[in-house]
Amino acid sequence: VYDRLTNEFIACILINVSRESINDVVSNVKILNREDGGTRVTVIKWDDEGTVVASPELDWSTETEPTTINDPRIERGLSLEDFKHFKSLVDFREVFDPEEVRRTFEDAFYETDGLFVSAYPLPVLPDKYR
Image 1 (cartoon, one colour):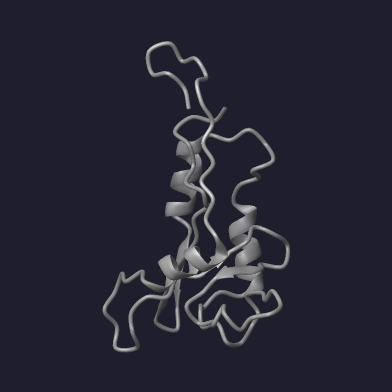
Image 2: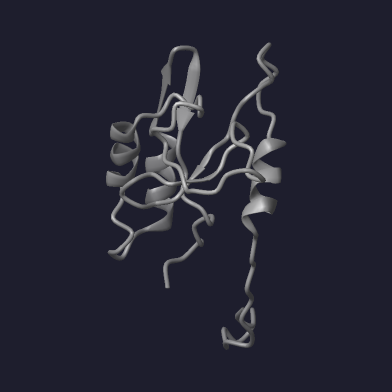
């Protein structure tokens, strides 16, 4: 946290969300009122395998092993190839312009089999890159 007047660093904050908590949040997201229960939001780790962090399709109380987006139990309309395409849009290891990244991801979506597929990095990008 920075002081708004002096820009001096004054504190540090940790926002820690457990896997159980994020899954509850994701499970309650309703964007569309479709006959099959509405929109499904799946949170995927930004790794090479596309490890699923949260999905309403899985019962996290019984899961014992990590799973990936190729798991047939997850109806998300996203293949590993599509995931890799989204990952290739921005190299977060390099300095980036947050506004340009926002526009890039806002424009990167598609529709398949009646599903709208989009991606956005979490946590939300800062207004300024530091």
